[in-house]
Amino acid sequence: MIICKYDGKYNICGERIRKIRRKSGLSQERLAIKLQLAGLNITQKTISRMETGKRIVTDYELSFL
Image 1 (cartoon, helix red, strand yellow):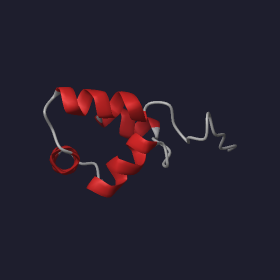
Image 2: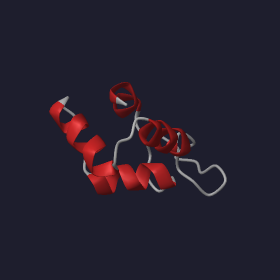
Image 3: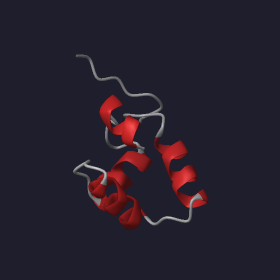
């Protein structure tokens, strides 16, 4: 698997995740809790890294988001 960066980021969906999270009135911590209850092992720090593009977002994680 080749990991490519786009504009210095590992994903292009981070900004969309942040926008939708804020529109829903959720903090990163609250979103992490909701995702954990849904069965995805994720933390607030992971969400922060996703939103800033410092972490790859897998297809599996996108299905939860």
